[in-house]
Amino acid sequence: DSGVTQTPKHLITATGQRVTLRCSPRSGDLSVYWYQQSLDQGLQFLIQYYNGEERAKGNILERFSAQQFPDLHSELNLSSLELGDSALYFCASSVEGAPTDTQYFGPGTRLTVL
Amino acid sequence: AQKITQTQPGMFVQEKEAVTLDCTYDTSDQSYGLFWYKQPSSGEMIFLIYQGSYDEQNATEGRYSLNFQKARKSANLVISASQLGDSAMYFCAMRRVQGAQKLVFGQGTRLTINP
Image (cartoon, rainbow over all chains, first blue to last red):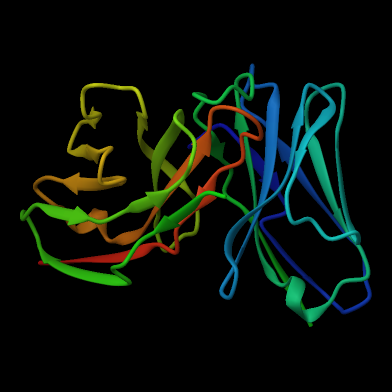
């Protein structure tokens, strides 16, 4: 158990819908990262937050948004869902977001868009 | 841009044998970090081992060691005395020291340990 929690574990929804994925980092970790794992794209970085502020952005679609709240939990919002958004979404956390920090991953949320 | 290449899509090894999973990387940075993660069939990503580009010693964590050859830009994972529970996908990843701290992953190697 990494100490990073993600809910829900599974999510099945229809095209055009909007969903929210939730992540709680390990106790004491200030930095949260979101990754998407799909069969065709592999593991891709989406976005990083550090202590409530956006720090880095990857190939995150405009239909996707995220935020980190004062209690440091983070949410990833996916809207206007398409079939291609079906993937495993991971949240990871690290202590300070420094380059030598290890990122510990949550169990993931498996999103299926029908 | 950074790139990680894992050339072995799948590997089959007998239990108790040692196994080496290959990883080569491409970066123009002088400082970077290299990581290995394990993803069992249950789906979670488990951190295994870390190597800094300026670390002089190869990293070791229990049965895992990282064979780091900086000039060849390779960071192979060695698992000694493999166990059935080692069957999983293994991902090599790297991260820059300067700039964005995102992890860049390879495509992974599926390791199967046979009894």
